Length: 308
Image (cartoon, rainbow, N blue to C red; front, side):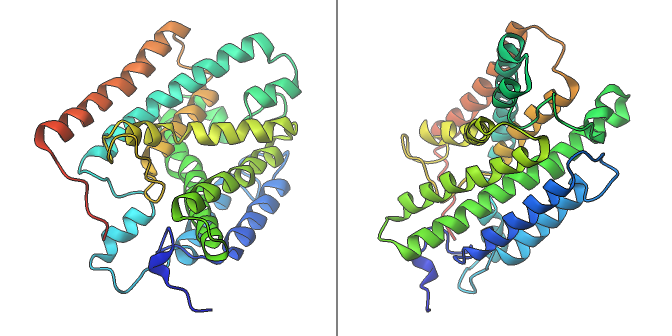
């Protein structure tokens, strides 16, 4: 079947749904086989997510030869191209704030309702302390500076990056497939793709930590929470026109930093500060970069980078 790729919501992503099906099957099998094993035993987290990233990049991204700037378009397709130079740093900082606030609320809820594995898996669906095996990245939190640095780099560069890359490319892949086989508009097809990839991603954690069924729904909510930095910044007009959410250009960096911050705080059992202190710092990490982005856009009237 001849496909006019330019009419798809994501022209440089495959529209073949088998990409997501096969990749998801591989990941679920690997994670199921790793239940009850330590980091050093295979298949370990690093192998799973490193292979996932490479597999997606090689198969999922199909560059169009008509693009004038293929490298920048490739980065934008992966959500790595900042809409305005320097905004990735500000968006990433907002992601850290969202991760801190999310963990703060999670810890408060765990202290009240997290007394058994079932409720704990719903409150904390990405890592259930009752059933999780002691992976090296969580053990390292009790060590010195070098181990803590490893924890940060591992979460940012492997776990959070791998999961968010899967969600991004898989969601765009499904969105293209929906657009190709229905009469939905591109924004609707993109939204369906995002919604459909979330339960697939949520099942990973169900297999990894032996969660309750309710944890799958809770994990989907977390998946949306990690998109809040982008949704919030887009909605107030720092990335696009105000009140316009551009589903075709989801930035990956803030989702990675939000996800990684939450994971790191789970591994270290929090920051050691009070609920109020965490709330204040997390809020400032959202408010200050947002004000900077608004000031830059309005003071210098910097246009959004044109789509290549």
